[in-house]
Image (cartoon, rainbow, N blue to C red; front, side):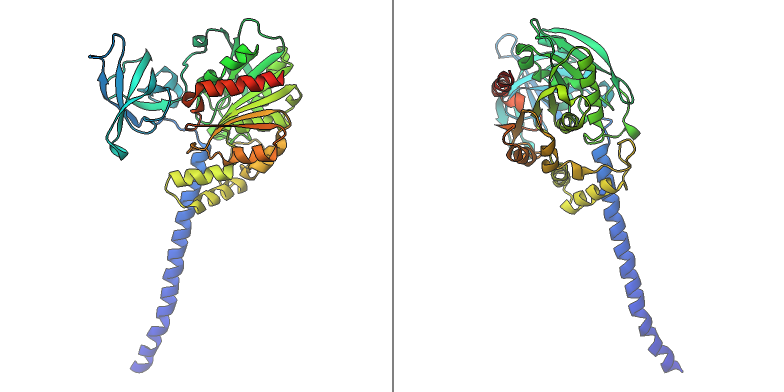
Length: 407
């Protein structure tokens, strides 16, 4: 009997091994799904606090010409080619426009290498705050903090949006052509100020500019669950403000979209109720391939590409709640280059850069190829939505040329 009992014990071991294997596999799958779900939610959710990874490590004024100063910086984008805004001492997204702001010129000196690199940039002006050693912030492309700095007559207006009231700046140059308007749409997580540097060529061409705030912006309605719709929800806001401009007499509208604002602009111009008054599109660093964009974001986060693909599936199936009315999910399959290219029916200028590490420019390339009769691609240099800063002359020249051809 003792021998019989011993013979039964080994039979249980494979069952236990199988059970532990299944349990471990289940934990692994659950962990992967949890990571993918978190990744998907981050794509939809506005950041409550802007990054502040750039630090002032030194400030030089003595020994330089009167009025000249240099600031030494470390951190992401501190060494970018061109001239930029440095927004510092920002406490949260809602008040970042009240933070310290300085305009910095090109890099004039570099020390160290790799992560230890630090650069000196010319200080052109300090509009707000005290630029001091230890100040932390971020390099942005803003350049202008208020529309009045452009030198044109500016009026703040209320804008009727589908789920409440937003606001915008109407910027009217002298000699504005009646009926000729440009609607400027900023990107995900940014503010309307981002688009102000793009106003000048439109003003010079006689366009009245409408720079808008949309859902999830300060002073505008929250999106569903305070989430973004990756352009699928925001297109309704863009169409609504085109309609508002139309009621003010706009008959020839050019929509100017930056990053995710580019996605929303293409969708609104292709599908919106007011699309017949739109005669052109200008896009800067547009998000025209969201599956590819998610893969790029996974790489930046040092995650497997499979996480991005699973996150995209979760968004499509509504396993992660989206922000689109009457739809639980966010169908990023509608946000591919071929699908968006089909919606482009007006002349379009795309400013895009192969050096964009945030939104791959392959989406822009593909759209330009698919709609070559309507789309002109201006290959630029620079980082995401910082193409104007790297080459303001080239950015303006191409935009002026495009507007002249529109007539």
